[in-house]
Length: 65
Image (cartoon, rainbow, N blue to C red; front, top):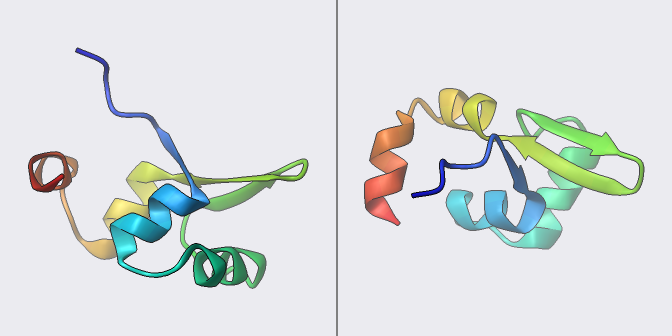
């Protein structure tokens, strides 16, 4: 069994939040998406930071997917 990734893509974070990828990219560019970091041209989102901001424990998200 593979462990959950420490970072998410913007589309994966958007799906978790229930928003469009376009909105998630816009929020990341405006520094309004917790845990979002740009690495070169690629954006990633820290899963722990995003879940902490949502006030959700990681195990709850795992069972909801």
